[in-house]
Length: 63
Image (tube, rainbow, N blue to C red; front, top):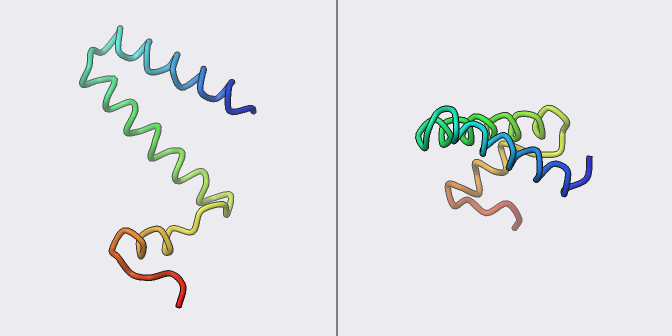
């Protein structure tokens, strides 16, 4: 899936959720979509969660 198609799908999903659920519902849908994206990339092996958490905590990943 190209980034253009993915962006269009995300935008359409958020637009529909904003119309149906309002702002806070749309925000919740966006949070769940982000969590799903992170978990999906982690399951594919394209995201190292330990390295990401270490970077968030300020630990250096390289000497």
